[in-house]
Length: 326
Image: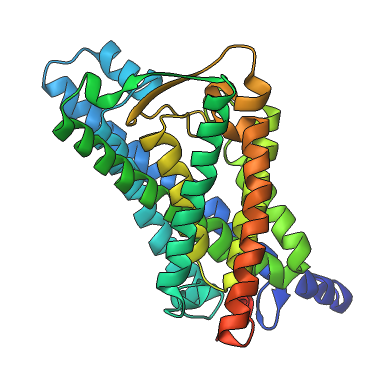
């Protein structure tokens, strides 16, 4: 039996306000997120392998499609959708039974939904268009041809539509995990500034397995996590960071055909970064690994601050931080 003093110490470590300490809740949530997602996606890949083998595809070809890529687009969508379903279920369960709060308090209030979403979409487009045209104008980016030079318009529209769906799900997935659940719990456990830093670093570390990753890429993605957290805290909702996250990735890959954190997406333009300028363009990883991405993220912070000042003037008050929502 532990002594009374030891019980008090353990209570302070594991319990806060009669519930499991928020730092432990965030840790268990991330662990469950990784584990359950892996199990579900491995099961889906196993079914895909069995289906392919039944159709006469060789084991080597199946293995190359899964491990070496590129995998079929429909398979990528299925895996992304399953991952999103895992996030929704896990987040609901953790929020309801460990946090003792409603799912909507993560940042799904209807207030300013349309305005914040529209601004996030516009901001992502402006930033990525700025990266593209500056790099192109400086001769750091080669534009070989447009998609319609070699593919039918219907095929191009279909590909862009699939990319839109993929990036919408992926963006919502990551924002619910890192800004919706992890950030508020870390804030409750260690304070807002430390929570933003830690959650953003974890967000960056979750990208270390992306193709062509580098130290600079992880630093910039962590900075992107800070920007998304800033958007979340300023607006008091997830709509703004989700829209910005989606718009950045969608226009980056599906429109301007720049690598999206190391992932090559066939978009409306055929673009190639010039050799020798990776420190600016990010090379094969994309803008997040270069100076262009860093400048865009800093500008995003400025635009978000200006947007928040405009919102305060029009509303006559400040947005409520997610941790203060009832």
